[in-house]
Amino acid sequence: HHRRFSRLSVYSRLVVIITTVLIFGGAGVFAALEWNNPNTIGDLTVPQKLMAALFQSVTLRTAGFATFDQNALSDVSKAVADFLMLVGGSSGSTAGGVKTVTVGVILLAAWSTARGRTSVQIMKRRIPQQAVANASALFILVLLLSGLGAAFLSIADHVSLANALYETISALCTVGLTTGITSSLCAASQIVLIIFMFF
Image 1 (cartoon, rainbow, N blue to C red):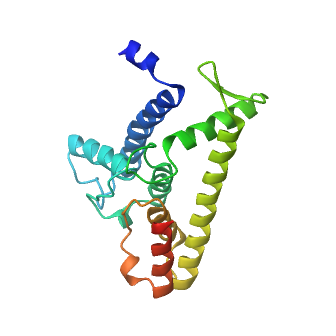
Image 2 (image 1 turned 90 degrees about the horizontal axis):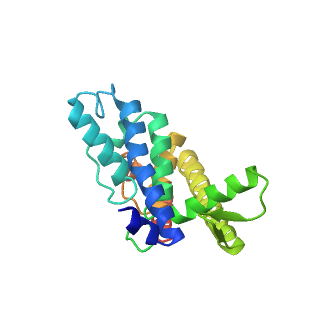
């Protein structure tokens, strides 16, 4: 396995590392935050709780299937879900989001800046500055659209900002999950979500 991993390109290695961290890290966070919540995984057996947390971590980035009411998540869990939906899957997949490599490049750039370095490097390879700029611009654009869309939904339909943000990020990143408010939104809010899905 080590030989195979060492043959992968820098970006492929980055994808493998980030995907592993997101899947199991996300599952751990959901298990910890929702362990005693009877409306999500609180009433399940321990193996079922672990499987449900793992499924939630994966489905937010790829499939969009729900095994429990997403509105029942705590606000902190919704924020974690928002982040996982924003990241999404990897390049070349049918998953939405800004992609794992984009987030990886941004994190590496932040780490390099914090250490006072002018170039971004990983595994003795330099990442071009244009790639860093593209990744940053894309992530900021998606964050900005998500925030503006959520503010619009919250004002137009008097829904909580947490639920509005969940809906807009889910639409923008083509996740397919909802807190259940979509059908009750006004026509203007639904049009915003439709536009986000196409975007």
